[in-house]
Amino acid sequence: MALEEGAWREEVSGHYNGAIRIHEQLLERPALPDRIRVEALHRLGICYSMKGNFTPAVARFLQVVREFPDAEPFAQKASHNLLLLSPESNPSDRSWFRDERLFLGDLALVLDAALTHSETHAAREAIGEAVGALRMMRRQLTGEDLQSADRTLAALESLETSLDTSLPSDPAGPRTMSQNVAWTRGKGRAWMLDRVSLAAPDDANAAILECRDRLARALLAQDAAEVRHQAGRAARWAEPVVRAGRESLTASYRGLVEESMAAVAARASVGRFAEARAVWFQSTRTLNRAFGAFTLHVPGLSDFPEEVRPALVSVLTRIEEALHAIESPENGADPQAFLSEALVRLREIEAQWGAGRGATPSVPAFSDPDAPGRQRLRRWAEDWRAVLATLRAGDLPRARQLLKPYEL
Image 1 (cartoon, one colour):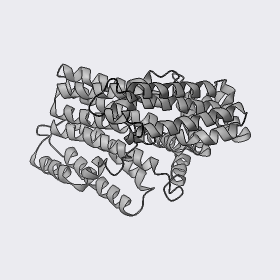
Image 2: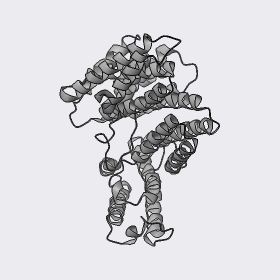
Image 3: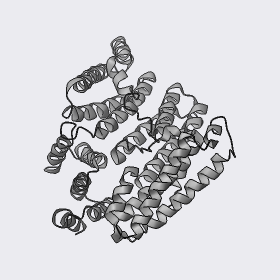
Image 4: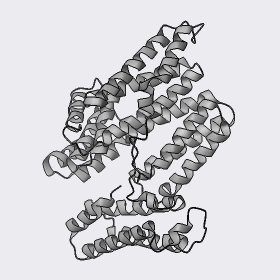
């Protein structure tokens, strides 16, 4: 009945926010039959794409294809919708490509560790995940991107063959060793690990991505102290958002990152590195399936000292919630309250860091009233006060339009 109500809101009334809420609540139910889950996931993707939110739409369609490849007609419909959301149809939206490339980079790090420690089962599992992702991606790629994907796919398949034909008594035989060296030095692995071409300078999640990459390399080196250090760094970045009031996609994502890295660090601390790598692999897969490689974009992040950025993410989470309250008034949330709280937090940031309190080597420049970060804070405050005035005048469409650039 819940599925039918969500479908009615989507297809008949065009009330996509309401349909999204129903489908997400449905997917949270334990022991939900697969036939219900796959349809709810597909309908979620449709609702997000109709709203123009292509990143979560692609994540849901990919989840259908990966987890339910034989569930027709939804697997076929999801594949078709992924093609519709390809760069040819939406040249300005490459978020799906970035998300998949980030996931491939995580898998390459998992594969490195498995090969280094001759963990053939884990290596085969990582290769299988990567091959599946590449086969799905290549249907949406052209030109140089397609060539890179095909080259990487061929290298992975060759590596997989060498693992399959190795002797159980000698999993690291000469042929396998030769293939491992070829893979390590090859262009396919380099393409999977290339983060630079995907990174946005104003990406607030870049710090956590860096922590996760360093943690994966520390696992490979069996450096328990570095694993703990990187897990702690990621937790410090995630904590302000996880702690910030109402649940949001941002908080859910960061919370899962924090929990998974803590679990990995706990096992590495007592020398259980194989188990830590297995947990890392599973958490990487879970993150990608649940969120894509969900990335939080904060305009002008590079204008601010690193110490200020977690507080900014917390502020902008409030703005995201104000926007959701405007778009879904039936939820009864007050967007003006969220905006007012965001403005209060902006003033607190200026008072703390602008006065130079808690100064560190990178913070004093922020105390200059003409510093780019201070100017950006003032511009944000002006914009959000304008939104408040628009809301008080009862013009919800205009308020939504003004706030949309700040959507996370």
